[in-house]
Image (cartoon, rainbow, N blue to C red; front, side):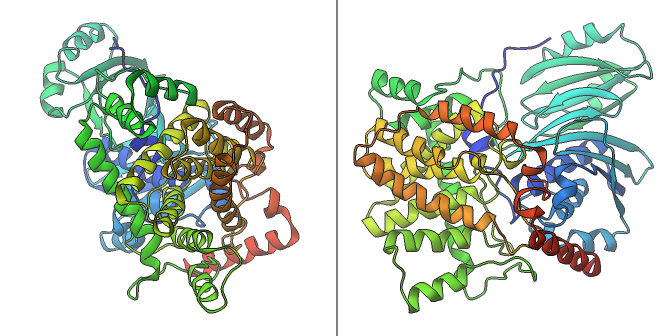
Length: 532
């Protein structure tokens, strides 16, 4: 029994999000969210945490390099990715006597490259198990709850009611359809002969009261982890391509940024003031992400292999000068700061873990050097977000699925669009800049080297920054990109999915399989084993 709930990319759930502590959106924030959902389903304090990953999957390949372990344990404890306690979670678990173990196995419950299984034991001895996939940009999909298959995305409250037989499920589903905020009800059998009723709502209800009314033998709830909770009156997706975006602009006599704001109003049900206020909140986080590394009291989360370069770049630019000019010089400096892990400084992905900060690094450098206003910058962030929404409509822009073209490449396309809009470019020129930026990133693998001093990722970030600014100029000069943005995204998707699995964020292929890459990985894993 379902209402017509329309799912499509959201500016704050997919494009800019989640607000998190330093790490990877898909390798730190997403497993943290999956663990949190398992902990909410447990419904009591946890005593034991068992975490299972496929030994050939992406998590196993990079384990520890992107703080996977900290994110997983934090979520299972009950923390979300923005909580600063993520960095001290192992000490916190030790203080409370909570035991844990990581298992690398043949994980059969999901074939996703970023699959993970949590088995949590509560203080009462109760256990709950959950299998989820990190689907990119911090988004998740829960695919199994205990012995039941499902599809839960963290955008609603999901109430689970277990029954010995199927007979009463239809009547119970009818009852649930009258609940406030009801979205849908689904059923699933287990191999043990029991049945589970899944009830999705946009508002919270009293679980014990519902269980009593529904006469279920067991119940639990999985709480939402996304900032925008889906409602039943979500409107259709306002645009899926740039041409549709422009058509809405022309029909409603609005600008690209105004239509991007309307897109989020339609998706979230929030007011215009609420949408703008949340983007302002995101903007402030991005500003801190690109600036606070330079502060005197900044605590840099550096290890012998991290290779952060923000301070070296600043000294070089100040003392010797660069050949780049002030805009690129500042944008690269801010982007280096954006990918530097600073204790307690929240970051904004978009779509890669530090992507929001990289987009902001470009836009804020242009703003400062060209005299644009804070309002101009905020509007440019909305236009960049609109490009991100189109990207998420046509592909899954994550390294595990389509390589770094889906991360650095899409970030560059977003930044190029925002810069061109800020500079007064026409809608066609805005699309041209984004299309050309993404075209230049096609075929990039995702091959981060464990212990490789943030390479080759940092080189691609710098390239993305330079491409965004350069292709804004090229677009404004009148160059035709030929391909509309959504067609380039389709090409990126096809090329990425045709890449060997080892080239998609497993730390096995590409730069990782060089002699030096292997030595770096060996040194990193030896250091990590010793430090733990």
